[in-house]
Length: 142
Image (cartoon, rainbow, N blue to C red; front, side):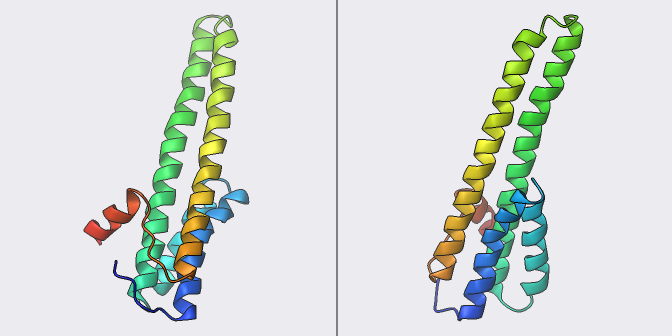
């Protein structure tokens, strides 16, 4: 997306879309998704630039949530199944693996929030920002 001079109001809304990832601190996993969705729905008719950044944030945060849900949720589901199937002996292996995936999931979620805040900073400074894969996807698919 070509960056031109955007007024302060547009920059604030675009930064808020990326910064909505911080809502995950209060509503884990879906707070940022809801925030980005609300901003996209309320701003898409007012500014194409804000709509693009809101949609980017929405796609990035949704994809991150789904990936973490599958990996962490899958690890915990398999851990419980393994523990029950081995009549509790598998717990010695399953529980540490489950805890490790949970901690990694939290770390990845935090890294996603930091990355989104960097995006908020960039757009507020009227600089271009594309998430590594979500930005190009949104560009191609509108």
